[in-house]
Amino acid sequence: MARYQIILAYDGTHFLGSQRQAASRTVQGELEKALCKLGWDGQTVTLAGRTDTGTHASGQVAAFDLDWGHGLDELHKALNAHLPDDMAVREVKVAADAFHPRFDASSRHYRYRLFCAGVRDPLRERYAWRVWPAVAELVPLAAIWPGTHDFAAFGSPPRSKGSTERTVLSAEWQNHGDEWTFDIQANAFLYRMVRRLVYVQVAVGQGRLPAETLVRALEKCPGSAGEVRKEVQSRVPASLAPASGLTLVEVRYDNLV
Image 1: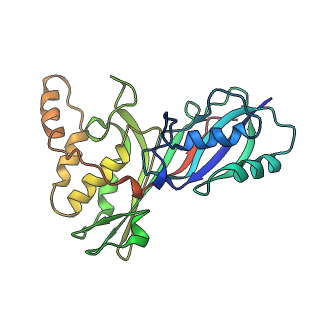
Image 2: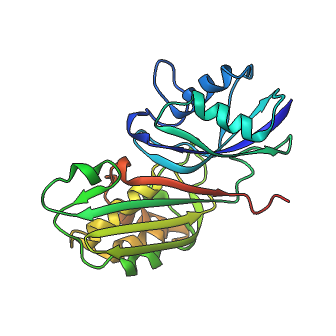
């Protein structure tokens, strides 16, 4: 018996998210089905993070214990042989017995894609958000996010009354023609945080929201000034960018030897 760490890629279009749900098609559910065909009798597979319905991944990390009497290459091939076409294992390795994909992660990297077009484009909209009217310059907005901030205005904690403070390590917008890409890396993310950040930046880029609102929503306001902050946060749109444009690119484990 050994603990294995795998990197998963999947097209999230036809999954009701990553986490196992009764009577619903999920990434975790399909992986566990494949493992059962290899003799796995564990209770659950652990994932590095939860992705929403429709969200994609090229670097999701999962771990499981398996009594496997063959090599890593054979396990890699066997898993992919039993997984559906919209999932694939990219890498397999043996992990430490105590390894946990979520709790041991030092950072996560997400990428969001969008393009500006007045007419729908079925070949691109499966993996990107079509935005219209077109956005103006988005590149300077990425400088708002790095650092340790309270992101309460931009997402909700995974547990009730949990902390909404997160540390963003890097954020960057890139533009190529009518396409925009937003890359963000943080120690952890709030629920739906990346999609909210993208939506509000697009609102600024379209002239519907002043950038100052985003800056002020992150400012620390001690004591009675907290009421001022709540008032500012209330002006931040609660809408989300579509899940189809979001991809979990990488989970890093810098603290592991």
